[in-house]
Length: 133
Ligand SMILES: [Cu+2]
Image 1 (cartoon, rainbow, N blue to C red):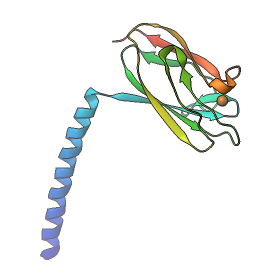
Image 2 (tube, rainbow, N blue to C red; image 1 turned 60 degrees about the vertical axis):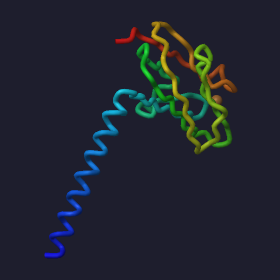
Image 3 (cartoon, rainbow, N blue to C red; image 1 turned 90 degrees about the horizontal axis):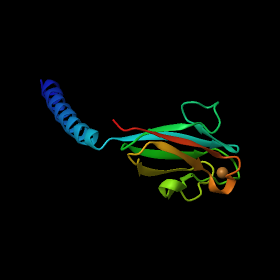
Image 4 (cartoon, rainbow, N blue to C red; image 1 turned 135 degrees about the horizontal axis):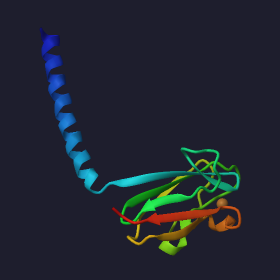
């Protein structure tokens, strides 16, 4: 009997937690930030989801909010990540570390460049901004 009451209390607590999570989620949806995860491996960038395409083109939507996350997997070499035409970038990231910056993408289609500033000759790619919805 006592155990059953305890279970009931737990169920109510879980339901309250779910409602609270739903409220947080709907509030978050209004200011949704899309995360793009990059890895610096050797002397190139890779998307976390595609470990074979070096320095991939990154496509953004005008007006969207994105968070660019960089993880450095290059022993002994610090890398950064910047989109200088947007005035955003990271301070250098040591191996095994992760850093990120947020960007509100200008609502203007165009092509830009992302780069690792210390290794700009090898580590750079294109950012395409498509027309916003
Ligand atoms: Cu670098």
